[in-house]
Image 1 (cartoon, rainbow, N blue to C red):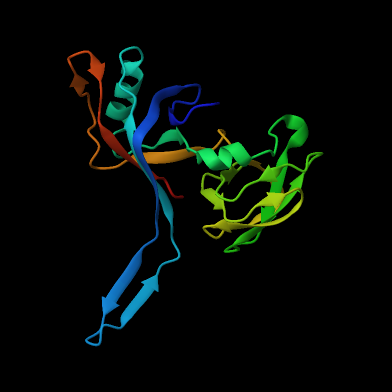
Image 2 (cartoon, rainbow, N blue to C red):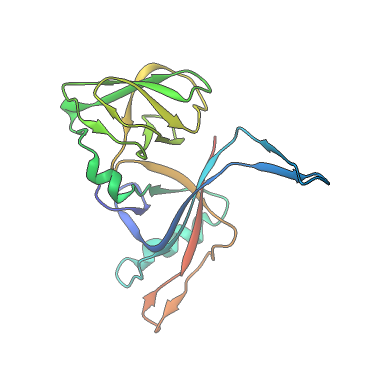
Length: 206
């Protein structure tokens, strides 16, 4: 997989394009006192939200239309999570079967322990990744070359007691909901190109 966009399990049916935002939503409650001292309470929950334009479509528009119309705001879809260009350029950790990266970590931990087969490639900070069999998407907050511990965000939502393969680069598939502001139908430019403008996709949390 070498593109970022809405994924139907076998192909990209709508590519992401600018303008695009990837937002970390962490609920925070703020209150200012009469002396303007600020009190801040941060919740431990977190989800990723993507606001993006979609490439206008002629061929294949029916795939996107059906995905949005049938799933609406109540059934999850899949997206491939966009990586930062600078991160992708620095990443030398390989993804072939001979170079699988596995990791373990404890519940609520902000670090995981990586074990690499054969390679000592770099997994840069800012790399989005997920564990095999677990939907939640995380991001590395420090560089890691070869085996060892790396810091992540958010803290692990569940323990990973046995080494699981991690997916990164273009292989991070995240379940999302179309947000309530996204139209569940068709919109056309010039009567030919299907163009929904900016859509918002929110990570589905277990």
